[in-house]
Image (cartoon, rainbow, N blue to C red; front, top):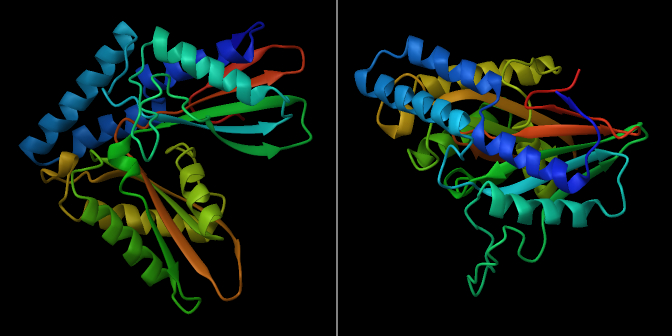
Length: 289
């Protein structure tokens, strides 16, 4: 979809409306496939309710979950100097117009800002020498975000230990992150960079192939192992515990081995806009070619 032209505030509002009210196609297809292969009656009924809920949310253009999350943004390409102010203004407007549940609170007083901005929006930046600016929103609900885990493993720990940590994290989370989940895994970097990698992994569409063959094999192994666990939709038992596993990796110190896990619930919300230098904007909930 291409729109001409818009302010960044308008772009942010449109991104939040897209992500909150419509599942990405790859997530919808994964849910439909899961409903088709599920063997248990309770699991099928849960998946059916999820699909019905997401369909109605898109039809009436209302958020698919009462927890509309805390919006996390990723900006890459040319970085306008006022982009953060524009994002904040867009979040405030979207909170009022869509509407979104106000979730941003002071961590100590728990006072709610009422606008999902609070002390500032959460933005990850990656400057690039390209003729566009790309902005992605990943609304993160607390049910799944609270299940995040970071392990500082030893350099001698191999793939089996890494996979065991991921499996234990997902299964110990039980039904709290509203499975079937999408599992984002970060390997390497520093402690903070590793958790950011896990979040970025959640932006990789389920129908894309990891370019790293080693990581692709790990994703497949974890997908099979987790869906063989019996945890199932909403933790009530079944064949579908996860819709996918996505892994990103970065170099780390010779004495370190950080591994992070970040989960998305079934409402795996994301949307991206790319604004070119002529002002035209292209939107997607998948990946740009």
